[in-house]
Image 1 (tube, rainbow, N blue to C red):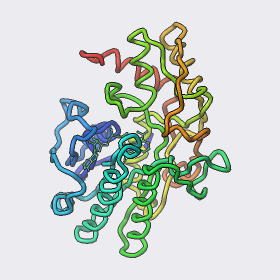
Image 2 (cartoon, helix red, strand yellow):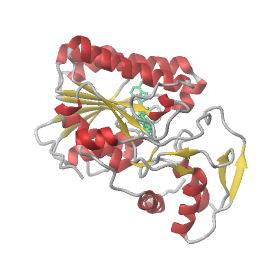
Image 3 (cartoon, rainbow, N blue to C red):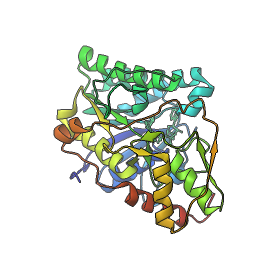
Length: 320
Ligand SMILES: NC(=O)c1ccc[n+]([C@@H]2O[C@H](COP(=O)([O-])OP(=O)(O)OC[C@H]3O[C@@H](n4cnc5c(N)ncnc54)[C@H](O)[C@@H]3O)[C@@H](O)[C@H]2O)c1
């Protein structure tokens, strides 16, 4: 685990009330930093941020340039996570366009005025589509199959353009299927693992879209947060894109089986239709670049991450 020190550092975290963002806010504050959260609470919830964490909250949108500019004048670093997710985006590509592309452009335009020490933009492994070669390296040709992957890639491209043209110190991390605590299963947009745990605890079958043999690179949220903050502090990250995953390919059925081992009983499955967003068959990332450049590597195995997520779910006072 990297040693992250945020003492005397102030960070704007867009999307800080969301799943990954709330974990990031807690990590920054626990590492001695100050956090300002900008979130329109579209999918986020302030209950995600631990009650012992002190932070400043601004209820607003990254689509509001004046607001973004004002907040960026107050900070040294920006972790830009605010985004419409893949399900929202598939239903309403224009909304996605305005937040994911327009909001990112606003952060970069404001950076020309405010000169932050560094910005990290959180992109997505979904930009690879169905790749030709596994594990997927950063220089694989993107294949954008969904409006969401189009907007996440456009955000990336703006980051590279602003780095090259205006010298803005910006780094891109491509997240792959992050899971873990604070991923609220009652949120219809949340990832598959929290939903499975909720179904198991409610004595229901887990619903699997398709045959369950589709694979993903599942990354525990603490590892994602740690890598994101390492990128935020590292000058070696400027102008670069990093895959952020584990390098381990896991099928949905394997996840179900590991959950069964953790809870000590067989999980029943119901196979239902593929969704329009399930058009990626296999995904696993090559993480050599982030390993060598940022000296980061994942610490949490899938079984350990699933166990932590399961225990967190069971500790909730009002389980969904
Ligand atoms: N979770 C994953 O597996 C995953 C994978 C790839 C990429 N990502 C990226 O990581 C980031 C965080 O994702 P997450 O899983 O925490 O999702 P999330 O939906 O929990 O968090 C996104 C946050 O952004 C906020 N938001 C949305 N539109 C906004 C706007 N216009 N202005 C201000 N705030 C706004 C939401 O309210 C929410 O709190 C996103 O950029 C996402 O694209 C996540």
